[in-house]
Structures are given as C-alpha cells and as structure tokens.
Image 1: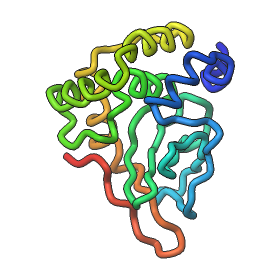
Image 2: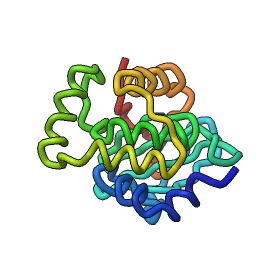
Image 3: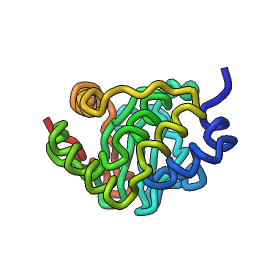
Image 4: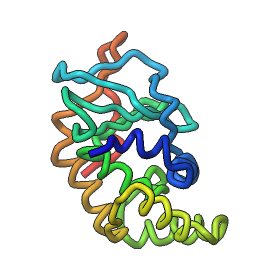
Length: 174
C-alpha cells in the first residue's frame, strides 16, 4: 500500500483541502519547543498548522502510529490512531480545534460557519477523500472517536516541555 503522506503530496486536490480548511501542512513538521513524551516513546513531527502547532507520530513504526497534536500555546492531545484516522478527522471536521464540547450540535454550528465562507467545502472534501481513497464517516462519529482517543488513550501520551519538565495542558478534557 502506498504511503498516505506520499498520496497527499501527489494529490493536489487533497493537499489543497488539507492545507485549508484543514490547516495541515506536511512541510511544517518542526515544533517550536523541545518536547518529549513522559513515557519516553519516540516522537516524530511530520506536519504542522499555520499557528505553530505540530502533528507527531508517537512510538516506532509507520503511518499506523498514534498521532499527538501539540499547539503553540502549551496544549496537546492524542487525536488519532494512524494517519487514515487523522485525515478523516481533518476532512470531516476541519474545525475540530474550535470545538469546546465536541458535540455534534457544536460541530454542525461550526460547519455552518465554514460553509458560509466556503460553499463548495463538501464537494472539495469529497474530491479530496476520493483522491486519497478514504471513506468518510459521519461527523458525529468522528467527534466521538476524537474524544475517545484523547480521553481514554491520551493519558498514556503526556507531552512534556523538556526544558522545564512541565506537562502540556490537555486540549480535550473528559
């Protein structure tokens, strides 16, 4: 199977959607601060966003590894298990960082705001997903899974600001 990272780089439609509104850029894998996982597992920054946040693969392996997102303000959360799950999140709910309660209703309100600014968002999203060979789950399912990963599995993926030894604040709380 081809690497999804390679597929994103090769598929212009998908790369453009992931860049915006997904705010996901494969050319921004360096985090602004020195960090490590409390467990000592490896961290590999592989993408970032426009506000200085970084997506990290955790542990050893390939694109199936857990993915932690750290913002530039000292917050972090495990948000996906594997790159396919992350890309589905970014395609279905690119506004996930703006969610506070992670409810379907809140996400629908944010979706309406995005659709007001980008009336072709759904068509662009569907073309990007097709280009990557990804089936898209329902928005509610994506948010339930995000919360499940962050809360249930996230306790094993605590990010530490290395110079001071302080943990990042959880972006998603129970």
